Amino acid sequence: MADIFEEVEEGLRQDRLTGLWKKYGIFAYIAAALLIGGVAFNEYRQVQAANTVEENASRLEAALVEVDARNYESAAAQLTELIDDDIAPAKIAAHYLAGVRLDGNGDAAAAADVLTASVGDLEDPTEKLALIKAAYLQADTLTRSELEGILSPLKSGDGPFAALATELVAAKALQDGDIEFARREFNFLRLAQNAPPGVVTRAQQALAALPPISAEVETTPVEDAADVPTEPVADDTTEETPE
Image (cartoon, rainbow, N blue to C red; front, top):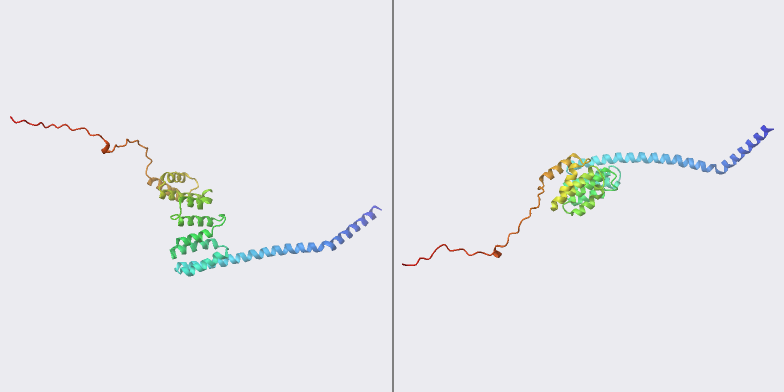
């Protein structure tokens, strides 16, 4: 008897499952289709992105051929198209376009604008390098506070880019005549562990060229000669009387 009851209960469970499947099974098919379709679409996007990157790499190489041939207008047009695509190697293309604007057109401001426009969240090292380059191109036209504002995202960090930013601000301070600030920053770079060797060497050279720190010597102010009383000068000559 127990076996009969178990068979009946099993049959009822199967009937319920069959009913549920008929009622909701379409959703399982839809979910499976979406999953398979999503994976396929993701694979397609990856393939397309890889193809685009490879194509853009060829376009970048063609643009650099134009740069080497000094066909700056043609090179600039090709590099601009790459940058507008915003797909690798667009960030690298921005550096080359800045070089074209600077070397080919002699326009430092336009080169700085190209580099600044390529700076995003500074997660990419090419963006950090672009920010440093743009700051160098504008250093002569900016105040020290403006320069520090531009470079603050790099100076607040650590590593070679922070050292380069500190070096540029120190050089600007030296240009402005703030020798003590420059000395302090160059001393920091001289001892910094993460500073590139070139930065350390330049910091040492800058410190050697700075005037030595001299103690303040108190001096007695010299009175104005007009205010100093003069003593009468005795006349040693005696008047001779005739005999």
